[in-house]
Image (cartoon, rainbow, N blue to C red; front, side, top):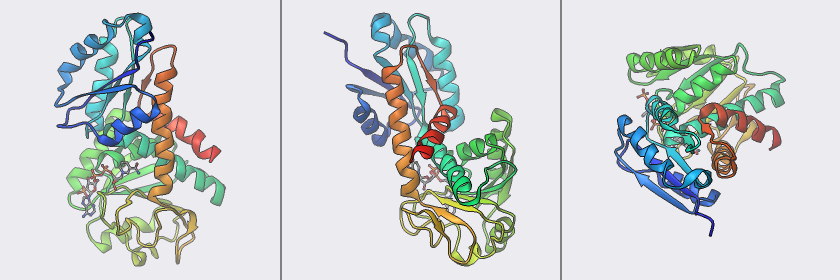
Length: 300
Ligand SMILES: NC(=O)c1ccc[n+]([C@@H]2O[C@H](COP(=O)([O-])OP(=O)(O)OC[C@H]3O[C@@H](n4cnc5c(N)ncnc54)[C@H](OP(=O)(O)O)[C@@H]3O)[C@@H](O)[C@H]2O)c1
């Protein structure tokens, strides 16, 4: 009898994400095993516990998923798992903390798709403002938008220092062209929006970060994308299903949370399917998710 497909889910948080568990089973894993409160120094021994018991053939039917809330820690955990492999005892590893890698990949690829389709351009040289940019999704989106040639400003509504530290992580770790901004007041948001070619809203669910009135100051704006699926909309007037709908009183088009969510869903599922079918071990992070999301947006 063939060995079952097993996915070992490591997370530094108290629980794994039910969303991730559902996605893994639906993609074809036959058992998903959670390991919670995992510290970085436990990744090597846990990984080696995974790889030796099933032989090289069984290793192809074994995977590791890394979750959590921090993208830097998830990247460190992925590196630690990779270093712990002892070929030919080696399994695929996929990091997607808080869904941030696949969600940011879907968001930035969708923005590129609308820039191309509606405005005949791309992200190169564009000014991207990320409102609510200090969370895991905003940080990953900053890195990806920068990798596509954009200049990025990561905005916090409470603390310039928090935005500065987030931008520093994006710069130091990934070489991103990212700087910090504060967006707590209408005046601060207006100042930011005036210069924006693209606005990404990646704040906590259920929070509006830009009003319709503030949007009218966005004279250069080409595309606005919102990840918030919980009312009120993150960007007032931008519907969750919108994908290329012109925003009132602007020349920009909007992309809503469920339009991005559709690509994110396809993306995460395809990442699991890649692991399930891989002949050689894969190490998947937001760069792989982005490459795939660009193809998925082009095909949609
Ligand atoms: N479609 C999908 O599949 C999918 C998957 C994952 C996440 N999401 C959505 O993506 C968004 C970002 O996720 P996340 O986990 O990165 O978010 P998060 O960590 O919960 O929040 C991101 C940032 O929002 C800011 N924020 C909090 N309260 C705010 C307020 N009242 N006004 C303005 N900003 C506020 C905070 O930054 P400051 O305090 O520094 O401003 C925080 O760092 C969420 O809406 C989430 O639901 C969607």
